Length: 338
Image 1 (cartoon, helix red, strand yellow):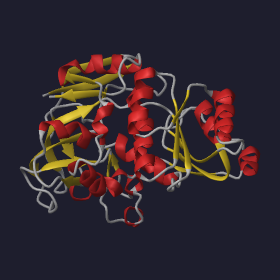
Image 2 (tube, helix red, strand yellow; image 1 turned 90 degrees about the horizontal axis):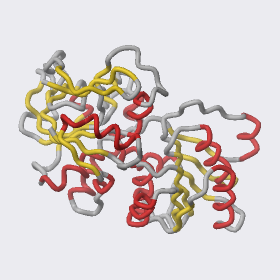
Image 3 (cartoon, one colour; image 1 turned 135 degrees about the vertical axis):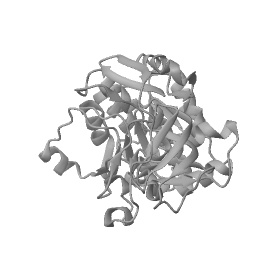
Image 4 (spheres, one colour; image 1 turned 180 degrees about the vertical axis):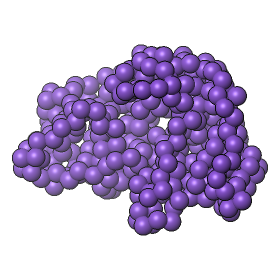
């Protein structure tokens, strides 16, 4: 089969790769219904994260189970399933505490931009839908593999509560779905930080009440102005840069909380500054598996449509264009269909 392979900065190729097969009795093989390019894929694509050898890409996936290992019990061939970007056994102490992305046996998913995928730890990683979904529902179900689950975790980590004020730093798919998550959790005011008209429109559709186009200290001042000098109760940091993290910390009121889910690159915190800010920080790679059952239910019942973040759909063999479009901010998120 052919799949996406990253060779170096801005060098993604769609080329022959080995067909996946069951290696361990806990594995499953799924035929991909849809995959996509993630904002975090752009870090190595832009050369901001080293790539030392040709690396198969992709960690967001959903599809039909084609085969399972002898130890797999929770899913079976023919079922439509969704899995996390972090494979987990869902039984270790960390998993039982709700942090499956820190599972003792964790394996990162890295080969999903392809027609077929091997999923390790299938029993703890994959969740089946009630039945085979319609074609129209698949994009929304795909978001649950990462960006919707990550946006949801950002809101959980930021302690979003009904009636409270939330600010969202970052207008990529995760940030936009963080807006949607905050709305579902009952936030009274949601401030989305974005300079991009199309993304602002989607943020409004997902529940944003205010848009702030400024960044850095000016952006923080604007949030303080909107909150009568207090700051936001909860801030979702969905970028991962020094600027975005500092913007999040400074925009949070004393006693408020920050949920940070942007993969950090070059972020350094001043301990004394953090100490006197009186803010709570919690985040990390989202434990998507914790939220999958509930999020699948929300999508299945038509209560949310997170698939709206996909504004570019391409055949899988045009994956290179998907990377380019997201890198150039021509697309929020590129959907890839085998």
